[in-house]
Length: 221
Image (cartoon, rainbow, N blue to C red; front, side, top):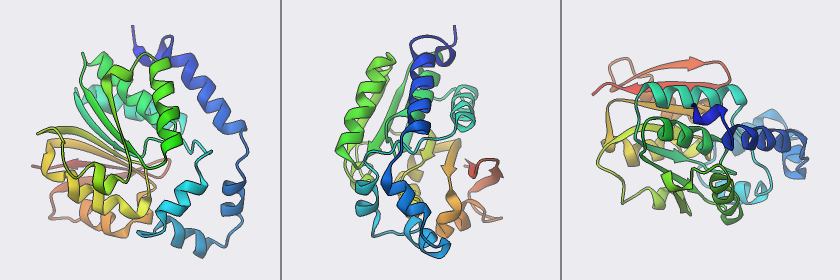
């Protein structure tokens, strides 16, 4: 049995994706109406993310169904048993990764969420999916919550929080990434610092862009 495609996870994910698609959040509409230059400035910000994500507390902002499946497949193929996620939101990506851990035989997923109401919602969803026992939700600013208390070795890192912080989050955890560890970054183009590191020809990563604005990288050593 594959956890991702079986009850209770599969029907739960279908409901969450449908709710996200059909829920209208004024803050998202207001953001979409801004000039492109202003949207880029906001998405790339290292200082204004607290206000931004507080405004978006009612928005799931999930990964796509395709990216969710990709996360599951990568985690399974890597035989990951320790995963770190930056940006929990309602826990849709978390469910995909935790399902992979379950099918890998167990493990730990540390995920961090700035907005308290989203952390509560994610916890409820993970409990409904029967996967909460595999997940540690750290509530607060990831620059603090991921600063200490990490496992000695991390197999997979998902970056899907405030885009401007991707470089800073990578620097916090990269000494724990094992050789061959995978990093999946959503909308990484909004963080040029991050892109310059993972795409450095003689650097410590191999990286390539995937459809859906996803950057997939692997730590060399």
